[in-house]
Length: 116
Image (cartoon, rainbow, N blue to C red):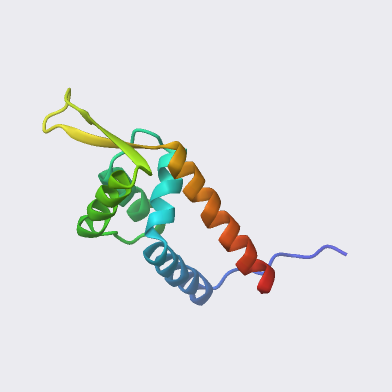
């Protein structure tokens, strides 16, 4: 017997969008780390624009830049300025400590999922 996929209703889609918003807001640090893993040498602006285009909502710059400064201070990401652009643009990259941080998140999530 062939099973047809149930079509998503507008209500289901809207609920998935709400969940995505809550997820990214709750786990902004993890999301930023995963973004830099997939997109090295990207900026805070790049993260904000990606979330807006992919998920349809905005992460404020006042939320992302303090987070990036904290991650840099902790050695989780490194920063360099692209001086060829005006104004100079800061781009970020994961460090080995950042990779370990992602692995820690993964381990915690896996333990959590085992409980579900």
